[in-house]
Image (cartoon, rainbow, N blue to C red; front, side):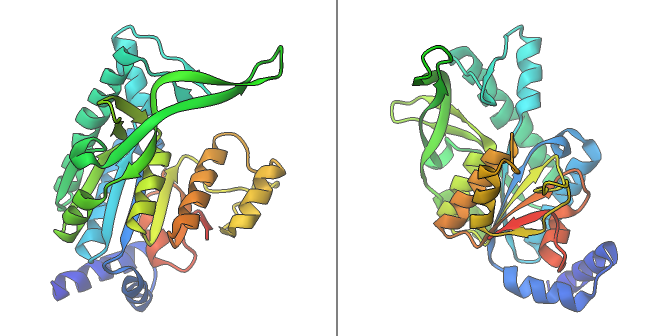
Length: 301
């Protein structure tokens, strides 16, 4: 295993064009630590990038780091619903999920997508186990009711968007068993309710809740942007939690980046050492983030 690790470190050094000693120093920091990775966006739909992702998490596991993957699947769910002539509608970026739709969501997330990622990790030489948040009671969820303002009365009301859930409690037992057994858990963001309901959960939110429960060393959110950008559209490598809050209030951070930043802030506040938003379109962004000084994307700590 020592020789295998040395070979892997040399390969990473050549790939990232960085010194082997630097990689070894970072490995000492992360060895045996949990890194939660949210896999989604363009990288999931790109065959080459998805294989690269599988190779990267396999490398982490073989070096003694404990990666945990939570994946999305919005485009794939949309495609399946379209094939079945089921209309999709969204409120504030969340899919309205009725009883018929949630069955399709679970089928796509826990079935085809989840097992495809697991298979890619096996092809890359790793050992993985596919799970959903319903397995081993990983994610207990409550119904999420979205707030909106009535344009006529300007009164804030709650909108029922169906079987969309928010994590209430995480049971990390099976995740810990898997990672300590040199397996990479791949988790679909589907939760269970107290009355046996199935809930569709935003993958970023699920990843944040799982990272918090595991007291992870890092949470990495793969996105379709370079990271957090300033008012001149330049990448900001590091920001504090207070700076992130200020940037939201000043509308420097807007749109779909807001819920990602809010997830980062919640996880860091819960004890996760740092949260990083990285560009999933960039090959080996995960390895660059873990094993180089410059990192990849924007770190919030």
